[in-house]
Length: 88
Image (cartoon, rainbow, N blue to C red):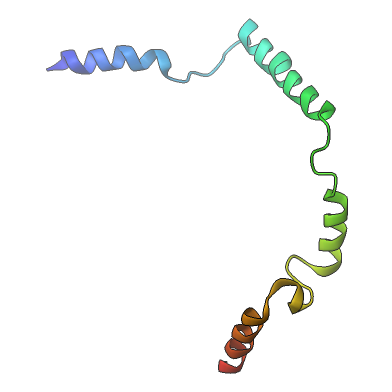
């Protein structure tokens, strides 16, 4: 009865997370080389969203979803919105 339990424990014990008492070589590679490469790539990558400054300026002026209704709603949407407003 204990054999299956011991077998499972033996296999899962290898994968369990244990605290690192003393940093080893793998830790230093992960900490400095791995994360450093990822940070370097992000800093040197070309900007894909070159309109982000324009959008941020617009959002700070108008708010997240504020502006003229014509900008967000079509004719049917404006009618539905007015009907909902009148129903209050």
